[in-house]
Length: 100
Image (cartoon, rainbow, N blue to C red; front, side, top):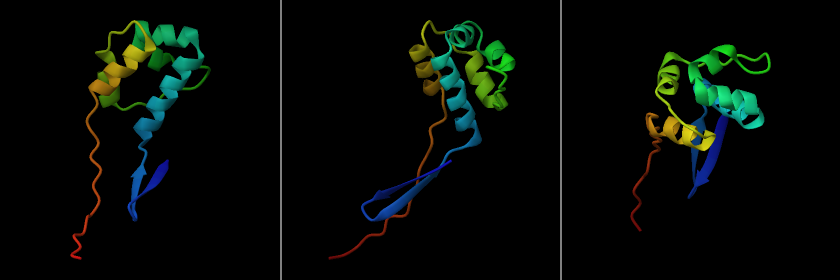
């Protein structure tokens, strides 16, 4: 998925990765299904392995490793812990100096 934003006359483009898409699907399933949410909170790796509603999650090893360290009592805490151990994304775009 691709996002574009205009920043002071410059277009900044962000391409959503496959991992981000899968993580988004994982959290959506947890939001709509109490049973899946409870399983995700109790055992994230098992929840991912079992999938949701016939769908599987294709998460890379790095994301599974992050999930395996999360201990949370609520989905909001789970999400906060997942984000906290995320590698920051660096967005760069050229800036030209102009002399007036």
